[in-house]
Length: 374
Image 1 (cartoon, helix red, strand yellow):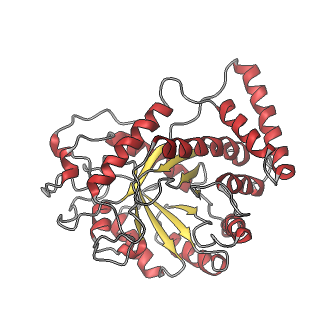
Image 2: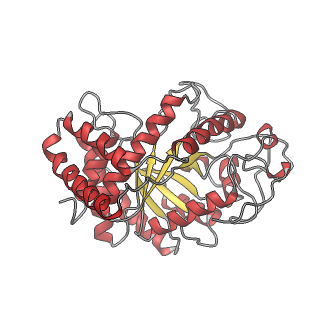
């Protein structure tokens, strides 16, 4: 982690810091230091190489609401449980990231100059990040949750799951491994502290930053910033993300053209820095086989080292079988292509009415891993 730099009011909390935009968000002290975002970028670089795995938990804050303790704590607990299962099954470090923001109310729109999703005002997002980061640091502070605690939660989940027969052998093996480690070390391993992600700031009155990616300016209200492909390369969110050193996530859907993706790579990662970009795919079980292989190959031809992550719930929310099918296809296709399935996005809900929940996705992915999960 980089040494803590001196802070000045010009550093700001938003990605527009240093542009002279004078937004409300800039007037607030930073919520994190650049070295923290830089450290996450290094971990994502490992995920791009297949040496780590990104676990991204969706926001559980209801639309129009402000993040509450129970919303954030639930996400952090899900991440802790997922880290234990996937670290064991995949045999690599799992990088937990919580999507923490204040989503706009249903039907609320805010002019952004694009067909992208509406965003809450940047100052509201910054306040939400402040609340969330405070809880993240408390959750992973001096008495950091340990692996055994998360494992016991997983055992309770499995005991009440309709898929108990499928999941229980894996939790049994994890329990045996933890007993062995405890016997050797005399103490339990602690869980990694989660990073946080947030939408790229939207401020129509402010020009996008002009600095080069990886330069001196950072979004200091979140470690990872997200934008939707339809925001476009000339829109403020893409411009703001391009001007920060933070790792950047881009949501990619089945109708996203290859040209749009390649243009975003040139805009956001001209230096081809490993871990700079994460592509979160939302293709649907019916489209992933047709869309993913060619897109992965096109991106590989640019020499960009990106993290490929899958959000199998978003396009399949009415079809329980398709949720698990897309996740399995994502892993299988990357294996066939010789590339890396680098991450998974968890929905912010438990399974209801037969729909797989976050932990069902975790266990389903673990079951596809060779070796220890089999």
